[in-house]
Length: 219
Image: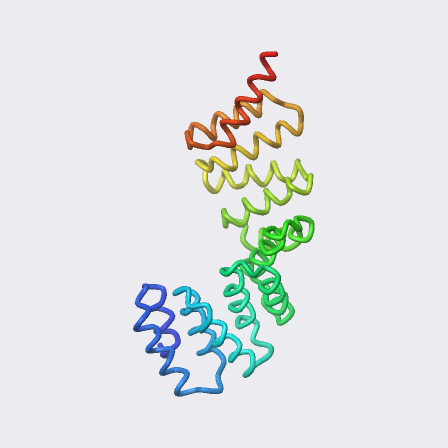
């Protein structure tokens, strides 16, 4: 196992000082190799040291302007600071340079979500969902985005898939309730809102929606 691999292992085990030492040694030994800078940038991002992380990713890009994971790392630095337009640019560069993984498509989709461009987010969240069918967070955000774009049937199917992955997902039940209301099926909606509240008694949106449906049914 080389120093970079050891460093990654230490980082995964939250031994950040040891990881930093290994990455520093790897960079000293191969100063023209971008991978060391990328790994150190990832470590600094984990530690919320965004100023230095940005510097390391930019150095990697100077050494190799096709280093897709450096653009992805830089995108995460901007995303964590809520600089969504800048993050978006970097994620696009990462994809253009050959990174075709669920995470980069998901993160790009989420930059659009945060800017309320739900139509632009949809194809990227779709791609992420295709690449990671068992990732609950990706599937849930994809389902939400479908609903926001008025694709209620697909949203409903995706939320049911989320529940196959995590059967105690109160937000998925709440969103199934909203889908049922769109289909003018208040009784099914009520069942879903009740289930959401059964799982999470403090689910304010479900409680509010339940109250409104019950009121409408009693009138």
